[in-house]
Image (cartoon, rainbow, N blue to C red; front, side):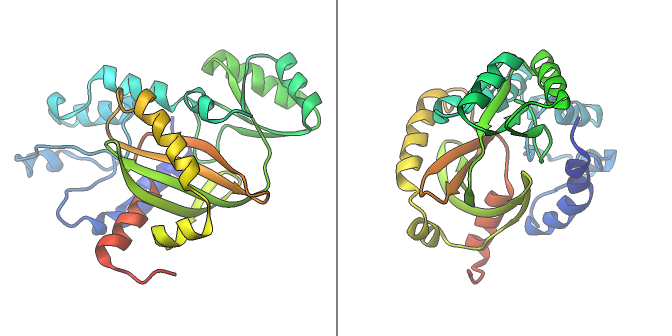
Length: 264
């Protein structure tokens, strides 16, 4: 089930975004009604912000033809790819944890970690650990491992900027520069790709990511993909996560490109 912040976004904020696409019939899955189908009998394509079993079920229930929707196998593939363990080969200092003992071993090596539920988003499923596991941490870890196969442990970093590589159907769209708070997206910063490249050393990590995507993702998936990065105070760049869906960075990048708005 999506977090309340995601539901509010779909019902309220996403409605405002629809004016950005005047030639499309846009709606939130929570607001779909039969008129969408009845009055648009020429419907020939459905593009979702992101596909999952809930979205597909709601569309089928409201009369959208099954052939316009991804197959169950495709939906399951997206779900598996979205599991945080997928990106571990690009995160050499992150770890897949299956027990309290494994996490305590990591804490002996480094004091500060973030524990992440493999299937989570919008700031949910994160626990910041300092020095030792609390009773609540232990309980959360065991329950998450039981339901989601593991927990991902990531070192706490001194992050100075959140960035992303944006792709569509295997092709690079551009960069995104955005702000977060406690793991939750806040807003995008209107910088051009040239400005972002000139400020942050992104080409090495981009090339590394794209070689990995070519081998491990594009043979299995076609659609929108955002690869979030963290730029740190020591000059290092780290892959944070991958989003197999549209992102606000894509929206900002495309609108700024098409509309020709002034960049900061």
